[in-house]
Image 1 (cartoon, rainbow, N blue to C red):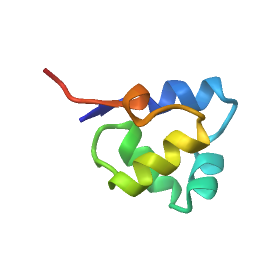
Image 2: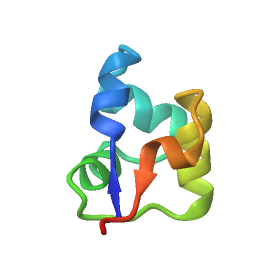
Image 3: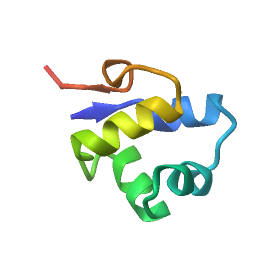
Image 4: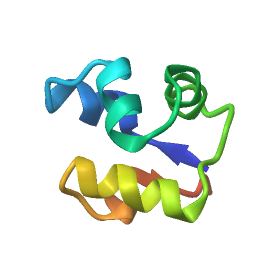
Length: 64
């Protein structure tokens, strides 16, 4: 699964630390998600989407 978190996080003016704190995870988790090394749980994906005021589908997508 791919994502646009890094781009969207920057557009929202958030640092990795900020998003991690708001989402209740470590900065390392955000780094891993941004680098496509970790697929978040549905709960975490929905939490991140809510924080960025977007739908999950706007952030995460499957590679074809």
